[in-house]
Image 1: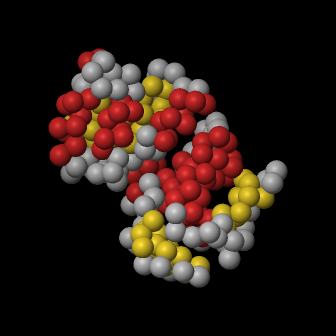
Image 2: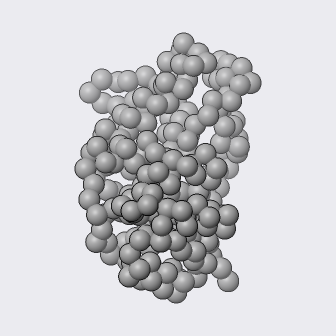
Length: 225
């Protein structure tokens, strides 16, 4: 029985073969691509998650992510030989959900993939919608709208809004937001959270002057009722 469909994109044959063997052994249907152009074609396979190498010669992973992000909602995990604060921010701005640094342990990568897929399929028995004045949050459809006009958010941006709106008034520090949204105790960089909050606020400001996400200086953020 096939568990999930995974697309692996890397220009190193050895890595592609290793990952393909690993995920097929664990019940995945595996699609592969060794270039950005091939990756764009394989998107038609409708993968549940994508592992995407950043450093590729013809079209790097960031460009691939930018081109497909508006058309696929599945998690995109970057594979990279190095990562610093600037690289991480650029990756998340491109629409990525996570990154794994090479060389990596297969078991750790497999667990990371499973965690993303579990969150994609998580059920929620609480209310399906909340309203804050003219702002509506539909958790089933994963939509935010203001006076019936949808505010386009990326997956991670909505995840942050969902966390804050389900706990209005509660203060979350940046590290806690990272842990909840990304789902593991990694070395979350607070700049990543700051950038996501900045983008959410910028999108909200196109529809309303009210600042729903309040900064609690020296601590973190909370949703204003």
